[in-house]
Length: 178
Image (cartoon, rainbow, N blue to C red; front, side, top):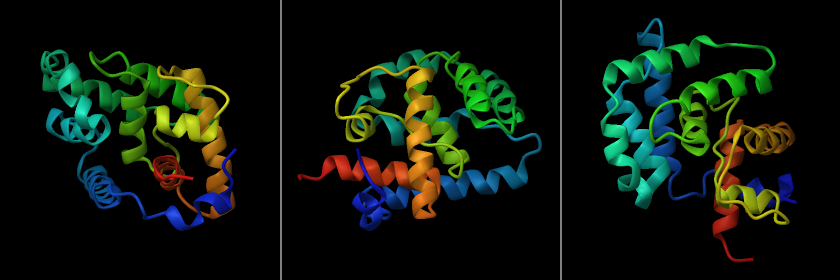
């Protein structure tokens, strides 16, 4: 299992670090400008590009059928759910986001991580295999997300970093040869 020491030098090492910080800044600004807060289709499209990379086109037609009014309504509902129990909050929020066509738990987790990097991280196969090398996975549900997020939050506490920052370091850790 990954330790805090494995990650300490990787906080800003990812090639995606600048883009990730730009998205987080954009969403932080939007939160001050929009009451109630929501994300529109163009903003979500940036998240889809960031998360899906080469797989962006795979679900593009499905996502294109979703009108902006639906994206706004769903994301507004998602960010109105605020609970002290992050596992409960995560379960509700991920459930709402995955109701959107073409959005599974990994993409939903990316939306949450970029908007609330102190509480959320992104789950994907790289992060999973780095954290849990005994269990190869390619598909993730809410149960797997909660397990992964719990371990990332533990490391975040040890490092004094945001949960999302630890996750990005884990992703970079997995990409590097050992």
